[in-house]
Length: 318
Image (cartoon, rainbow, N blue to C red; front, side, top):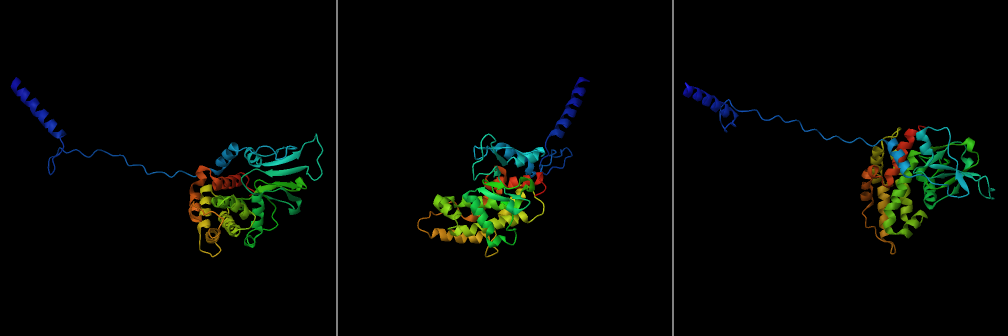
C-alpha cells in the first residue's frame, strides 16, 4: 500500500514539473506558457514652453533695476498697480530730483530711465517728451527706425523709450508708457547683431554703431525682419514660438533685401578690409541657429523676447 502511494505521488510530481518546463522548439505539447506581460513603453512627452509671465517675473527678480543714474535724483515708484504690473513698471524708474537741494539750470525736475529689457512707447502728444541721456546703441536704434525700410510698418512720430536711455516728459499727467513687443524684437536683433560683430573687434563694432560700415546698413534689415516676425500674429504667443518665427525671418534669403543676404554682403565687404579681423565664429546663418536654445538658457535674444511676451500678457494694452 505504501509503495502504491509513493508511486502516485511521484507520478503527480513528474506531471507538475513537466508543465513548468519551457516548450521545446517545434513541440506540440499543451504545457507551453504565454509570454510574460509587458507594459507599453510610454511615449516621450514634449515639455510645454515656459509661461512667459513666470519667466519674466523671475527675470526681474534676478536683475533689480538699481538706483537712478544721477545721485541727485531718487526713484519715486508707482501707485495703483497690481503686483505683476508693479514689477514690470518698476524697470522704468521715475527719477525725481531731491527736494533738499535746488534743481540746477538745464536739468529736469523729473525724468524716466529705462532699465528694462524692452522698448516702451508713449501715448499722448509726441512733443511732450525728449531724450535726456542717450547711448550709442540707442542712437543707432533710432537712426535705423528712421531708415526708409521702416516707413511702411512704423509711425515715424512714435515716441519711444529704449533700454539704457533716459527720457524727460513735460507733462507727466498727459502721457503714459506701454511695452512695444515688435520694437523689442527689433532691439533684441540689433543687440544680437552686435554680438555677431564682436569678433571683428571693438573698433569695427563702434564704427558700425556710428553708421560707417556695410553692416550699418545691413542690421536695420534684420531689425525689420524681427519686427515683422513679432507682428505676424495679433496675440503674443509663448516666447519659444516668437523665437522660432524670428529665427526663420533672420535666415530667409527669398528677397534681395533680406536680412541674411544683406549680412552676407556686409561680411564680404568687411573681409576685404585690411585692418578688420576676420570673423571666426561662423556665418550669420550659423549664428542665428543659436537662437533656438536662447529662450531656455537666458542668453541675449531670449531675455528680450521673454520680456516682451510676459510684459504684454501682464499689460494687455500692448
